[in-house]
Length: 158
Length: 372
Picture 1 (cartoon, rainbow over the protein chains, first blue to last red):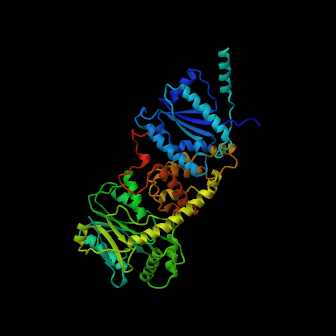
Picture 2: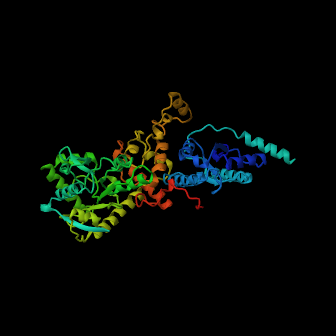
Picture 3: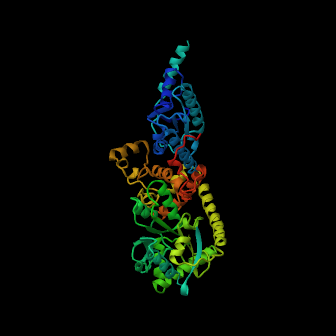
C-alpha cells in the first residue's frame, strides 16, 4: 500500500497568509501539494463550521492562517479567529478528536518561506498522526502538481 | 444596602406567605407587572404567567418544581425593546445566569427590571411531575405542599427524598442553585417555617418588612455545594472516560433526528434563523445520491455531528447548565452532560464563568488589541 498522504485544507486570509503563499510560489519555495488552499477575505470570517465541515469530509488537517496580531487589515479579525480556534480546538479535544489537526498560524505577506516551512512541518506531523478518524472515504487526487514543481526545481538547480 | 429578613409562614402556609409578598410588590408599585410561575391543570403542572392584578396570584409558586422552559427567553422577549414599565421577574438561578448571558449578547435589557431570584430546590421533568400529582392523594394544595416539604428536606439532607421520581439530570448535578445578581432573593434553605428574603433596605422599608437575621443558611448551602460538586465531577469523569474517540461521540448521538428541539429549548441559542434550518441543509435528492457514492452507508438524517459540534461552538462558553436541551430531546440524548462537561473545559480555558457578572465580557464577543 502506498504511503499515507494527508490532505490538508488551508483557510488563508487574503491580505497576509494568501499573499505569503503567493510569495512562496513566486520565490520558488517548494511546499508539498497536500495542501488545498481556500482564500478568505479575513481570518475573522472563518466560521468554525467551515473547519468542521472540512474535517468531517475527509481533511486530515486544517490550517487557518492570517495576519500577525495587530496587523489585521480589518483591525481585529485575527483576534476573532484566535478566540474561535481556541474554543474549537478545546471542544474537539473533549469529544475524542485530536485537536492538533487544526493549526492556527500567523503568516505575513512577506513570509513566503514561513508559509512553505509551515506546510512542510504540518504535512510531516499530520502524516505521522495518520488518517483523520472523522474522515469519510474521499476521492484522493494525485499530487501531480507537487511532483511537477519538484521536477522544475531540480531542473533549475542543474 | 441589602438587608435580610425572614417571612414567617402562618400555619405553615409557605406558598400563601409568598403570594402575599409578591402581591405587595404589585400593590406598593415596586413593580408594575410580575412574571411568575403559576399552577395549571389542577396543580399538575406550572408555567410562567404575566400578572398585573395582585388578586391573580392565587396559584403562584415562585419555587416551581417544574421548568417547562428557561424563562430567560421570555424576559428577552419582554425587555428586548427596553420597555418603560417596571417589570418584576421571578427566576431560578440558571434562568438568571442565562439572562445575564443574553444581556451581554444584546438580546435582553436589565433596565426597569427587578429580578426576583429564588433558591432552587431542583426541578422535575414536566411529564414525571404531572404523573406524580395524578398518583398522589389529596387536594392539589396538599399535594403541592407535601412535595415542597419533601424537596426542602432533600436539600438539608442530600438524597433524603420519599418521592418516587428524581430530579432532572441537570438539577441533580447543579452546584449553583442560589441566585446571583438578583434584586430580591427568596430562599428556602433555612428554617422550616419561613422564607428567607434578601433585598434593598429601601425596598424593605416600602414593604414594611422587619429586618431579622437568617441563621444557618450559609451552612446548608456550603454542604449542598460540596455534595453536588462531587456528583458533578463523577458525571463529568464518566463522560470523559467514554469520549475516547470521535466514534464514541457519534455513538452517543446515534439516535439524533436533528429535530432542533435542543436548540429551540436552549436559552443561549438565540439566532432568529438558525443556519441549520436554512436551505443549505435541505439539498435536492441528487446531492444525497452523490454523497452516498463516496460514503456508503450514509447516516440519515445527515450532518448530525456537524450540527452538534457547531452548537457546541456557539454555546459552550455561555452554557449555564439549565439542562433544557436534554429535557426537550425526544430521544433522551445525554445533552446536558455533553454540553456542561465540554462547556466546563472551554470555560476554564477562557477563564470565563457564564452568568456570574455583567462586567466580564463573553470571550467570543470581545477582542482586545492588547492581547498577545
